[in-house]
Length: 306
Image 1 (cartoon, one colour):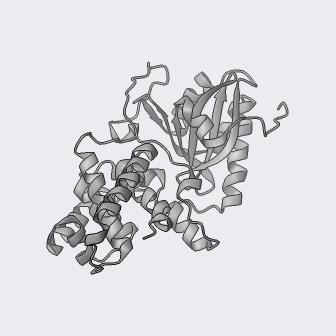
Image 2 (image 1 turned 45 degrees about the horizontal axis):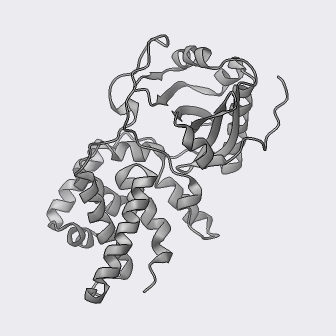
Image 3 (image 1 turned 120 degrees about the vertical axis):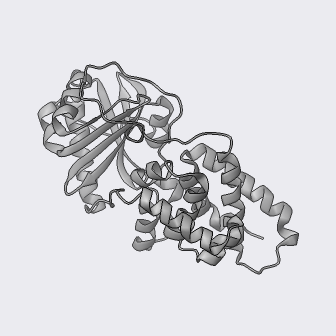
């Protein structure tokens, strides 16, 4: 029995359910342990893949009973209109996942695009607003395209209950934004402009990159900002002097991202949501260990003074 070919997709599935890569990895390991122990009783009525998803999904549901939801700041309340307001910190958040961990080992561009689209930050944040069982139904039906009958068997529900849960989940997530329209090279070019502007402390260049409806979230603060004017006012407070910020390109959740250092110390990672050629959202995860996880040392870019 070889479960390894399913590792990447199971990790992506558990990440969608749980919202953090480390928890997802732990549950994948637990899934493998349960599968090894139960393999002699596997009757083959479903495929091995379906059987593994059943084990993984139920392991995720068990894990979710022990903690609350993990929404982004924009899922907790209205935006702040005061960039000078003190940050209100919180401890538990969803965290980004490197594309390299969940991208299929395939040369098929469609498979890669589908995998990335299934872990977009907006989707992960939206899923965290759903009750766990609705979350599982939506992922299994909409993202993974399992038939309702198989989902019902996986979760111990009736087909009617699966359809009802799916309708409620869709209603909650109906306003989730679609994936960006830029190609990956275009996204990379926009990311390069963002990183260069930040490293040069060029506020005017950053302002040009933002959409009018741009949003900034800066975890671990619960405070977030909406609208270009307010976002620019916030950036004015944090942009500092040229050379204080250093960034290196990465990808997270199928989106352009930058690992960030401040005055030589690891700071975190910024994930960009790009829509219609501009930056619609900057989600900053201010957790120092993420800088190294996403990009290693920030020594591979040379930024000339602006």
